[in-house]
Image (cartoon, rainbow, N blue to C red; front, side, top):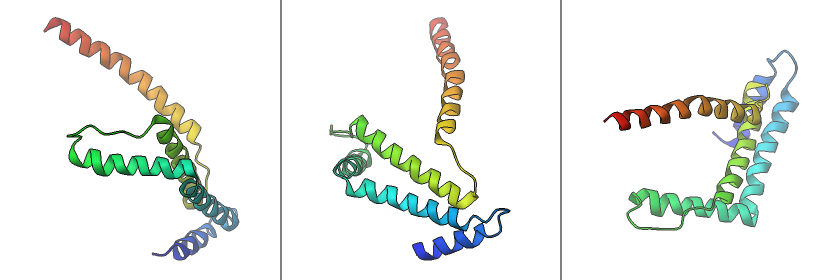
Length: 130
């Protein structure tokens, strides 16, 4: 399905919302595409995408049998930020309600803090009795 068809389908779906969301959907789609275009056209974005692609194709694809340079953490954060913005815009376009990445991250952090300390303590306790 072409991008034009996808946009038309989402805009048509937005007409059924209680509030007319057609402009909101179109703006969200445009914002998502703009974010991706900016990432792909910036020097930093190109380098980050290339580093991740090389790591995937040359490193992970061969089970890391030989050492290679992994993407820098700043490159991964740049890609994460762009993906988050694209996902947020796409969610708004599809669902008609905003998705707040900050709230999502905060919940994942809370879950991680609730899970990992007890899990690590349990592993340490199990190893000390073995």
